Picture (cartoon, helix red, strand yellow):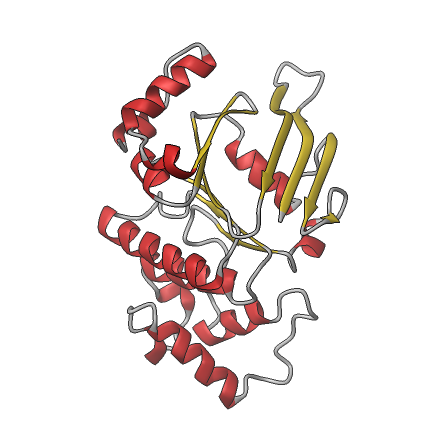
Length: 265
């Protein structure tokens, strides 16, 4: 479903601020894979997701989604393949528009996005049914402005919007990091339910090593723009946080210098 062939990305080349964010990275995801991604600050995790989404073009290499090369496609043309949820609950939605209007725009992803013909009753019924599954009472607030929702409600809505068209690939960029622990757990549980019921191929960045171990069928660790550890199946299930810390030190030649990840053990 996703094939990345030796992609590289350098920011500010030839300056004192030059940063090689991705270094000949290779990655293949099979249909239905749920891959968690961990790594220290500056490891290249978000750059990887941005490269896949087309936010930044890679300097070299290839990116294929469902056997279609998208390497040079602009971000808006990749939207029909992808669903994405960002770390900030304020991203991914239109704050001044109602819940049903945001969902309607998500449903029209990849088509001409217009609400000129309005939202019909059958469409509105579908939104109510989907929102009811979130268990947040949003099904009774279809016309409420999204900007009035709590962070957890908004992130759950963004997740629903990202999966509404059953994307080829779902990208989750630390989508629970800005939430309180209880809300984060609720959003994470909702994530697992949506991914499993629709068999979505998913790439999820997380700072929480326990979540990285417990969620999905595969885990990759990044450092300095490369994948330094890739584990799946029974081997992943047997992992502990201490194992991950040891693997990082072993593969990178140093300790994992990321306070957020250490605190999230």
